[in-house]
Amino acid sequence: MTKLSNVITKVEEVIMGLLMGILTIVMIAAVTFRYFLKDPIPWASEVSIYLFIWFSFIGGSWGLKYGTQASVTFLVDALSENKQRILRIVQDIIMLLFLFIILFYASKWVMLPSTMLQKSTSLGMPMWIPYSAVPIGILFAVIHIIARLIRLFRHQRDVPGKEGDKGI
Image 1 (cartoon, rainbow, N blue to C red):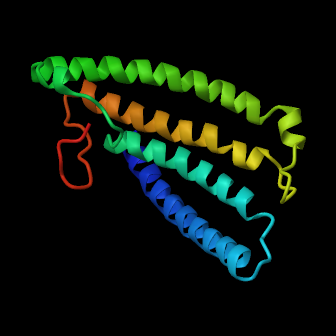
Image 2: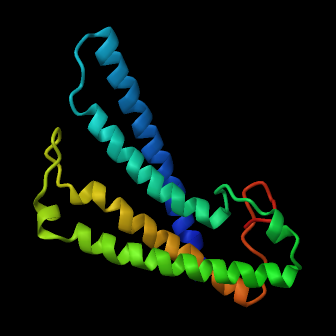
């Protein structure tokens, strides 16, 4: 599961880079056309919103792997290492249950006939494409949490952050 989590992390990093690059180009073009050429691009805001939604869900999953979310840890830091590990296991199990519920309902929502037939206003794009960011991002997060739980149960160290800190 750790190998799968690592592969997904690489995929997430590529996707986030592409999304941010495309988002930057679209926003620069939108501003240029609107304010300098006085001819706004009608679909630019819609595309930007959908790109940012995808970036948020993929980035949220990536952030779970590296523990980049803000947290208050002064009580946890006061515990012994073994108690911290047990608390992290309980935390991850609760988070996993929550993510499974979201994944279940988000998947049902994306596959509803009304969602499958719905089109976006500017592009006419099927809305299941931007809506799919929710179950895909949550699925990636579930895989990262399961991999972390396996490491915790095996008494292995958490995934270190990019700068070599102790991780989650």
